[in-house]
Length: 350
Image 1 (tube, rainbow, N blue to C red):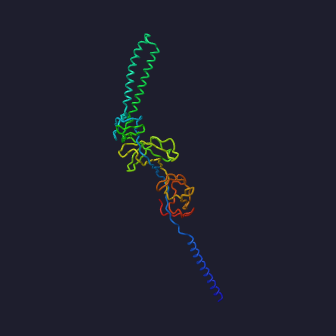
Image 2: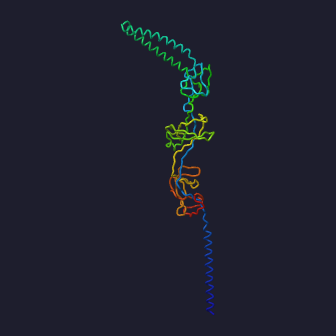
Image 3: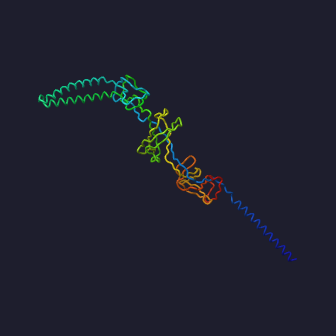
């Protein structure tokens, strides 16, 4: 009887111990489940080499290859005008003539004196051979002859100053004077511009100045249409502008078009360089910090924070020049919820 009681007591003790152990295990599992939060899945991007075309867009303006404000050198009255507005004229064409009758009269007078003096000098040249005249008189006649020739050249120069001629082949703009007007050297008569030959002026940031060179091809569009036009760099200003930190560039426009007018605003597109092995990653993968830029790289299935250096930035991607390699897996979403060493589970991998 006693043995049976002892055995019953032992069985109760064992059962109680078993229930306690099971209950404790369940409680521990529940606590672990509470502590361990479900892992959040993130999107990832596998780094691979790609073509990067570094292009910049700047504003520019069209200008006539040659342009001059036509002005007269001396004051006077306009007696004739040959300024065909909007028409082509050849270099040297007489465009405006000022009153010069007084100068013409003086020129004729000097030319008459020169003719007489030349005859006297010719006769004295025969006399000097037979000692019929002193050497001093002969030299004095020669001096007077040369002086008259010089006076005639001066008078011809004054007459030429009453004429305004086309300095080069070009198209005349709108004229601003009429016959009979009294003009001064500050009066603008009209403008003349080279026809069908334009240059393009634009500025590029200082960091691209070393990329610009003579013969470089550029493309541009006008403000009123999207058609692409071509131009070739002629030269650059030999220095960076102190105020804007930009380099001035001048290009020659290729081809002709009625849409291209001097003074027009343009949008210039420059292709600076090409890189067939650029490492481009989505812009959202970058974690900006005060002094550095960070990306999260998958390393043995865990998050690793890596400092990187960036290069060219596009609308949806950015070039990485240092910090990652081809084949690295970059986290592109859920960046704010990840910590160093956290396990990674992917929703999508591109």
